[in-house]
Image (cartoon, rainbow, N blue to C red; front, side, top):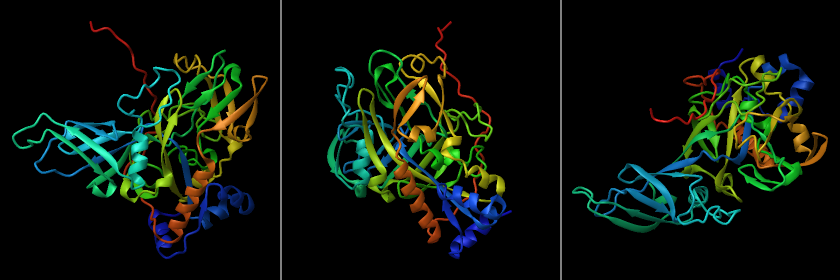
Length: 395
C-alpha cells in the first residue's frame, strides 16, 4: 500500500500524517481501518522506565604520557576496561565501590552506573580514576582527573536489552515483605507492581516485528539511534492472545545512541531499595503504516493486553514457571484490581505520562522533517525460546 520511500518523501515535504499510538485508536474507530490506513503515514510509540540491561562505551582520549587503562572507576563506580587503551564500558547496574549492598538488608543502593550516566548526560563532572601495569608504549600507571561529557571523544549508549514486549506483574504471596527489581512488595499480596508503557509500548504495537527490526531508526533519550540487534533474552515463541499480543515477556531490543545528544530528563539513575541500581531510559519508535495489517496492530488497547501475575516470593526466584493468572493493563492502570478474591493496590515503575510525552516529541520531529524512517536491514527472529542455565558437573 505504501513504502518507506513514499512516507519519507511526505515527511520531507511536511505532508505526512503522524499520530501517536494513543491517538490512533480513536482515529480508526471514527474513520475505519481502510480509510485510516490510506490517510495515516506514521504512528509513534514510546516507553520510559527502568531498563537494567543498559550501559555505555566511553573513550577518554590519551594522556601524556600515554596509559593503557586496565582498571577504571567513574565516581567510584567500577567500569570494564578490558576493551582498549582508553575505552571502558560502564554498566547501569554496577554498584559504587564499597557499597554495602544488602549487607544490612534492605540496602539503599544510592549510587551506581545508572547515576553516573545520568550525571554525564546532564553535563556534570565526574571523577575518573584509572590504574595500569604499564608497558613500553603505555608507561603511565595511574591517573586521577575530573571530566564531563564534552571531554570525551565518544559517549555511546549501548543497551543489550531494552523495550521488553510485555512483562510480569509482581505479587508477594508470602508472609514477609520482599524487595525486587519491580519494587517493594507487601506480604499477603497487599500490593502488586508492573512495568510497561502498555498501549504506547513499541513492541506491543508491532507484535510480529513487521516494521521494527535490526537497523530501525529510533529516538532514544533525545538522540537519534537505532536497533543494532535483537535484545538479549529475546523469546518471541510464547503464549499469545487472539490479537497476537504476547501474554509474557517475549521480544526485546538492543539499542544504541549518542549520549552527547541526549536530554537529561530521559536518562535517570534509579535506586531500587533492597535490590540494586538501574537506569530509566526514554525510547520512542515510529511505526510506518505500510498497510492495514500494520495499522490494525497499532490500535491495541490497554484492556486487550494481558500480563502474567507471578509470585516473586517463590515462583519467580525458584523459576517454577507458574503463573497465578492474568490481568489487563486497563485494570492495572486503575490503581486497584480484584485478583484471587482480593482487592490489591497496583503501582507502575514505568511512566505512561513520560512515554506519552516522548511519543508526542517524536511526532513533532517527524512533522518538522527532522526524523526520517529507516527500513530494517534484517528482521527480528519471530520464533525463539529462552534457554535456562543448566548447572552441570564437569565429567
